[in-house]
Length: 248
Image (cartoon, rainbow, N blue to C red; front, side):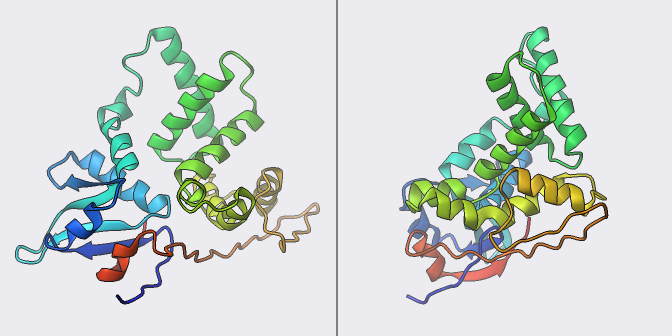
């Protein structure tokens, strides 16, 4: 079995229908057909990659069409709750007072992180509502909730700890570059270097060798992305097939 060096957050592996059973034998995976609603398929595709997992694309070589994706079952279950209508009326089932509080939290999140995806802002607003209730919604509380959401939903944090049994201190250090990438992509486009360093420092997202000197001036911050390899036999079907590149 040939080895394959794959990086997190961008690996798409194409398999044929005759090969996909090799992956489906593993617990925790499920097939998402191309016949499923577009919003659900997009969610499965994007969130599988976002969490540092491999996205398996089932390809019909005769018709040259995608038949669907093989993704972690947990992500597939999450997608079932995500429909296009949720973008227009995020909480139709909630009573008006609760919906008002949720919308307020949503608005506060999108003001601070104006480029955040709708599905992320919605999830964070719900977390804020359940944890803070009627306590003051401060800027720090919003930041804490966004950072926590990114850690669990947009990095390989949970997979590394629960599946790979890595130490949390080690994992937190590994995912710092990814955390910074995602958060910066959600902040206003022209956020200052000083504001970035302040946010990274406040939430312990700087690497050990980062020593930014911030005075009364703008600071240009260029954090390098890292390639984290994690397969180690846990997603061995990756070694059986051809690798193509995919980006979020």
